[in-house]
Image 1 (cartoon, rainbow, N blue to C red):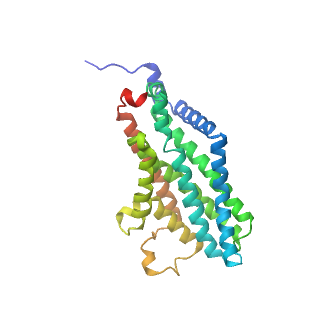
Image 2: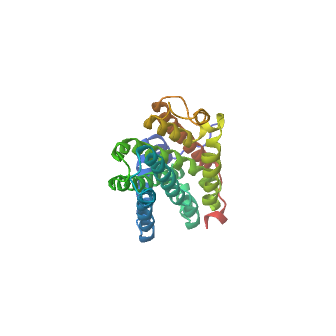
Image 3: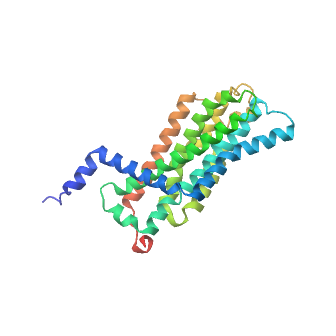
Length: 274
């Protein structure tokens, strides 16, 4: 005796990648359209201006332009870390819970690949939106000329911004699907515990963090490895930059795969869908 056959629509939706990709892009466009509101645009403008304001204040306190190394350290803390982290927290973290509360999850869940499209489309929207804000903030900071030879940082920091958004958006997708009603609080905890505390532990656990890869790439790009203090050598990885980029992309794939698996197997009661 054979089991029930899947419907033609479901089988076609699962076998062809093109409809799935179109659904992901459609969700991403929808989520970006939701971000194009005056309050969200005002927050984005603050994110763009914030790094420049801090750098100008630091230069004014020193009564001189920032030297190349100091400027790189401050810019790294402000853009790939602060702006990217905060931007991702307010974009991807509440998105799944919002869809649950608005009742759209019922319609998404019955469509082939609907849950995957919702999650991956929201992830893509968060990466694009936050990445655009961070890169504009980076350009504005460099345009001020407050960092000596600052334009040499444009290429390396663009890579750092992109990797920070890709990896951390995938990481924040996990608490968004595990505890959707407390996704923002859970994501803040993940950022503090996983990315910052675990990233500073020189053991196997820090290999699972995006922070380790970004720190390592910063040191490689700035050619600081030869002058780095011995105790700080434990906080970076000795593999080449290409391996660090590949590690971030692999981590993003693993985090998203786990999040999708949770969505595929988890049952959401009606109380969460209303």
